Length: 243
Ligand code: SAM
Image (spheres, rainbow, N blue to C red):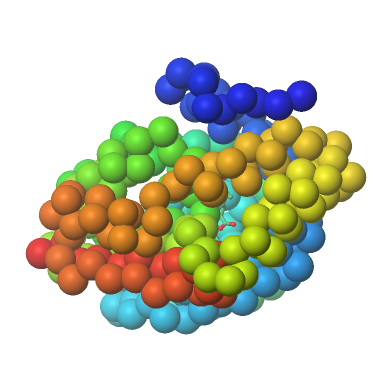
């Protein structure tokens, strides 16, 4: 079966994204390792390692899923408090369990809130840092997410987004072959869910490229917007500051 995401309505897309992650929640961490051959850990380490986290920072990790970024944030900063938010309660449930079993994570520095990134239930000017890793391309209106991030950040607050991006080099044919052929098959073998992984590959292709996404961030009012490619643009880190 095929999701046929090209023709679905916005509501259908939202429902399907929800179903994809509800289906894969328990296998999510294993699948990330398998599909990226472990490299997602290095991308995430690099992303969090490059953040400038103020003392006693309040951080919102949106689409935080099973906590990969939140745990790294807690290890990187001894004082930060992290709100992990995701539209999928099953993903957050896996994350909470993981937090309890990771010895070096103080669970009282984390809160877990089920919410839509396009309509965040947080007050204006609340957070010092907004992070989102591999989540924004799943949202129906990425521009709304950026607008909401702008609203909930304090003046001077930072936005930092890690997301798949566009590979523009001689490696592109290899990357395409891998993502179109290997990833759905891995989804089938490891999670008995080919369609979900087919969707993930398609969503990567449809997401704006590095400059296009930078422009969306600028349009919502952020200053000092810049990006950095990881692994030839397989992903990129976009950053900006709320004036
Ligand atoms: N940030 C985690 C990581 O890097 O491992 C999880 C990334 S996972 C690929 C994408 C997450 O985005 C899923 O947990 C999914 O539930 C969440 N998501 C999708 N649409 C969302 C939305 N509109 N609002 C909030 N979270 C959303």
